[in-house]
Amino acid sequence: MTAWVAAGGAIGAAARYALAGLVHRFTSAYFPYGTFVVNMTGCLLFGVIFGFTEQRFQISPTLRAFLLIGVLGGFTTFSSYAFESFQLLRDAEYFRASVNVAGQVVLGLVFFWLGYMANRVI
Image (cartoon, rainbow, N blue to C red; front, side):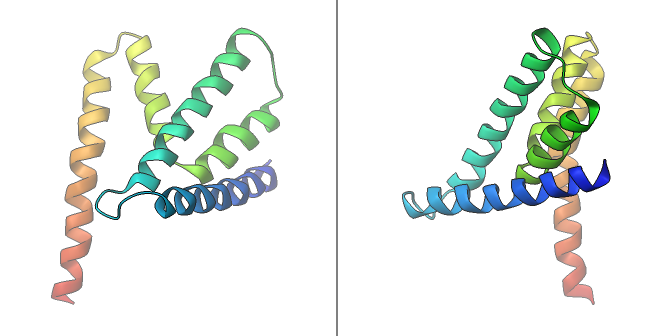
């Protein structure tokens, strides 16, 4: 199964690069439109695939891992973040969902800053 996830990740990463590059060709450099479009597209596709396979059609664990972890994970991990947050909300785990949403955004920025600042010390 690992090979399928790796292959899907390669496909997703190439698709992310292509879509973000295409979007950047037609938009302003003053906002990360490419990343924004990739993240929203990934969330939409993850929701469509998850909803379809949960409600209408069963797929094998290997195909599920290839599509959701491999392709969409390589395309954007933001879709996984949105899915996990959605699952917490759907399960009425509002506090955990809030911690996940706010924590990943705020701590992500803090850890990025720490990594950035570490380069100034070294």
